Structures are given as structure tokens and as C-alpha cells.
Image (cartoon, rainbow, N blue to C red):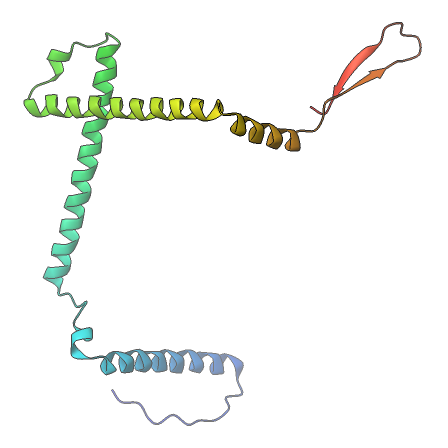
Length: 171
């Protein structure tokens, strides 16, 4: 349904003016967006277009991928838990491994944990080697002495007490 031509004049009623502005602004924004879209070349206009089938196919593939990832993470957690329970003597390993896939997954979990342990040990060895260097010790000592307040011993003597009580300040 077509509208009549808009008379451009000051609208004195505040609420009416605001409502009219909102309506006109929405229309102008639509025209501006549609105008920019119409100015684009055909290749750019159709680049991201999806029909319902394409959209559903894309969404379905993303959800399937997410489900696979979650199943893999759950399987890894189950195998890690089973491994720790078997190491603790709570469960027998042969009772819970039904298929070669389970055995492979358990082996992968064990390899992953062993690799993490080796990386941690290598990091510890590298850190120990670094800490044994004299230049590293001097840097650490200079930084720690700059940040720590000096410890001072203050001897308070109260009248009537025969012994001195040392107090550490700067903790």
C-alpha cells in the first residue's frame, strides 16, 4: 500500500516527532543498505548467498563435527580414567577393553601422558641448567632484592620487663 508524500515541516509535539523520526530513520536505513547492496557487482552479491538447503547442510556439518570432537574428548577422558584406575589396582584392564579400537585409544592416551611427562621433565632439566648459570643467579638476586623490603630487627623494651623481645619488621 503506497503512502502519501511526506510533508517536511517541524512537528511540534515531542512524542509525535520522535515516533515519526524512528519510522523515517528505519526507512532511510533500509534504502541506504539496499542501495549499497544493489551497487555491488553480481559476483559480490551472490558470494555469501545461501538457500535453506545450503544453510541446513552447512549447519548440520558443523554440528556433526562438534559431536565428533566431543565424543573423542569423552573417549580420551574415559580411557585416562580407566588407565589410572588400573594403575591403582581398582579395575582389571582386560575386563573393560572390548575392541581393538578401545585398546588403540588407551595406547594413545598413555602415549599422550608419557609425552607430557617428558616435556615436563625436559622443561625441569632446562630450568635447572639455567638456574645453575651464574649470570642467571645474579639477575634473580638483583630483582628479588629490589622488590623485597629489607628485614629489620627492632628490639622493644617495655618498662618493667627484664627481657628484650626481638620483632621482625618488613614481613
